[in-house]
Length: 318
Image: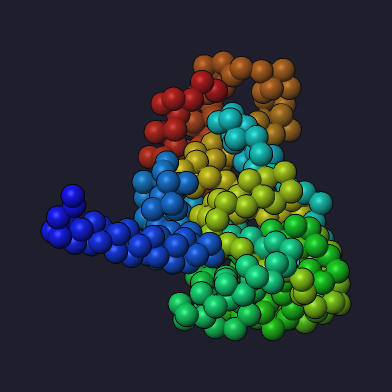
C-alpha cells in the first residue's frame, strides 16, 4: 500500500518532469532558428580564440585583410593538404565581378514553406523580440566584417532573398556583401551601394515567396561546400572558398609564403639567374640563402612580419 508521503513525492516528480519537458521543448523551438552557444562550441571546437557575441569564432581583422590578397588556388591547396576537400563553390552571378571581398560567415538556412512549422517559428521569433518577416532576422544579427551566407535551395523565381532595401541594410551593418544559393532582385539598386557585392545564383524580378527560415548560424550546404558559422569567406570572380577559422592563419601565412617565393622566382627567371628547372624543383641551399637575402632587401614585398616568416620557415621543407 502506497503512503500519502510517497504519493506526494511521486506527484512532485511528475510536476518536475512536465516542467522540464516544457522547458526543453521551448528551448528546442528557439534553437530551431538560432544555434545555441553549446552547440556552436561543439561544431567549432577546434577554435580557441575570440568569439563574437553570438558565439561564432571571430578571426582577426588583420588576417581577413591579408586573406583578400590571396588567390583561390593558394587557399584551396592549403585546405586540401589539411583534408578539407569540400570548401569551394563556383558558378555565381556576381554583382561586381572585379571586386573581391572577405569576412566571417553568418549563415542562414531556408526551406520550402510548411505553414504549420513556419507559424511556430514566426511566433517564437516575435516572442523573442525579433521584428518583421523572418528573412530580415539574419540581417539584424550582422556585425561589421560579417558575410551573410544563405542557402535557399538554389531557388531563382520567388527565391530573391534581398532587394536594394535589404542590401542597404546589410551593407550598413557588415560593410561586405552576400553569398546566396538563391537569387536576388533590384540589381540596379544594389549596384549603387558603393562597396557592396553579391554572389548569387541569378537575378530575378520576383518576390520571395513559399520559403521559410529554418535556421540561423547553423551548418549549411552551399553547392559542393559545407559552411559553418564563423568560417572565413574569400569571394573572388573564380568562386567562393570557405575557410575553417582554426585554419585561417595557416592558410594565410602558407599562401603568402608561396606568393613571396613565386615573386622571387619569377624575378630571377627574368634576370636569367636561375633556370626553370632550378626554380620549379627543390631549391638548393644556395637558392634558399639568395631568397632570404632578397627578403631582407625587399621588406615592402613581404606581407607577414619577419618573426612570422622565421617561425613558418622552421617547419618548412621548401
